[in-house]
Length: 437
Image 1: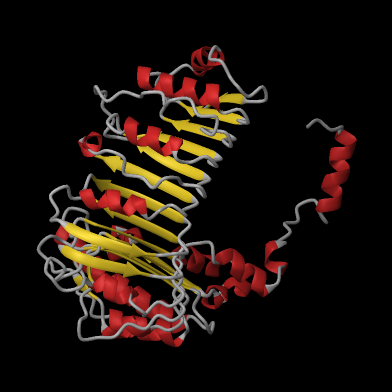
Image 2: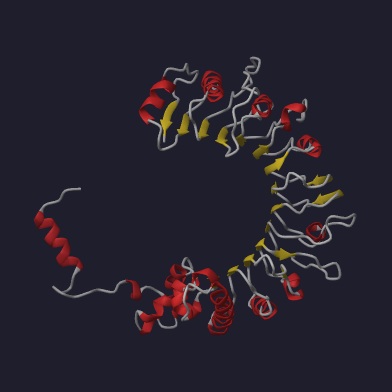
């Protein structure tokens, strides 16, 4: 924007009361607004603002959030050299525990909205019980704990105080954490979001019910969002029954896990995300997803072509599909597109394990219902391989109400040449806009 020098000088005179004056407009904002701004910062950065002025000195203590990362503590703060890793990690553990305890003690606000800790390496967790009791007393709403221990150190075991926090709405646990409390009762009456990533469930490779399923059984009456991922799955038959569940995510990382059956009873389910190596029980799982609205599916491995029709008769309510293709799962995608007459958004992502194979994309038989509602198509990682091109041709030819087709290409690809090639394909929709990113 270009403006005249007279207008520019006039604006400067209006904004600046004096030639060399510095106006601190932020500090004049209401205290509640300043605390809200600070709540978007990690606690370490929030505390750093205390040096700005007297007004800011204790402002951080009013922020209803604790967000600390042990790895953000520098070696200069520890007064140690980088060379001795063991001393650095030991000192970091001691300082981090001191910092968390001090911050909890100094914060003056009543309720604690968020309690987030990220701890890397060597920690006995002896302070956790006191911290959780303090957080529970302050009616904490969100707890996010990430732990990574040395290989020669036992996983962190959560203290009893953790399992009776009645005010928790969001709970996220990841890393080297053990959840195994057969003698304790769970009580999370307000919990709506539960994410368990790479945590361990001791005793799950047996006939007894896994700890995380016991946690869900009647102890989370309003749970809406549950996701878990682990390479330490159970064996045998288990049931997941959550009538209020709307979002479910399952991710298995170990192809050598034992055989198991998981029965899911979630009549309110709207969104399902699944990433796992091919298993027979997966196909039974799909048969119960006929009411799902949003589906994210990442089939891994090469076993998908060995099975026949695994789907329900129709995904009538499915409006958004996110699918990660690996070169061996074109047939899975083809059948999904045939079974979803009301699909509005299709997002294709090329998986990191993508390999070209003899399992090529095959165009489905013509059906006027196929892609009849599709308005948005997105392809991430498009390289113009033969199967990719054939899929794109099919979508553009059949999607009669398509509004946008977006293609994300790698930095080495010429966007102009890709767009020129795509523009040559016939489009059923006269209003479809092609984009290349």
